[in-house]
Image (cartoon, rainbow, N blue to C red):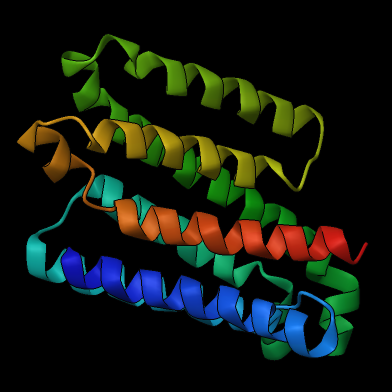
Length: 197
């Protein structure tokens, strides 16, 4: 998994560095937003290579599907691979459907990842409860930041758990670099969009 973390780190730092360089040159922090779906698909390919080499885990496959769904629903991806007429008529519905599928895959990923951890740690039910509350919140109040908050909380939980000295945990959570990279890219994108709105 070391090669995956190196490539993910390089991709995230490159994305961030473009924004910082544009800040110095133009005076505006602006990373290459259309590049984000390509980087997410790059993470999907890296995860697929890792699954092929290291063995199949359902939780990792679900995370790869979450990242692929996030790349597909990105506005730059939709503008590139669809017509203008479709963008006006169907983009909202497509984005909502893909967003719901992303939440289902993400919930299944967290659930499958936490079930083995429940035997080892007594606090593993906390992210499941928080995820359930945030999912219910999402269905009643539509929020664009909800998936980003979920990704951030899950990344923090995985980061803390990975620091525990158990080999079982290292094997179960080997998808962490892809999760961290996706979270970083989403935060950079969201901060950039909030700066310009």
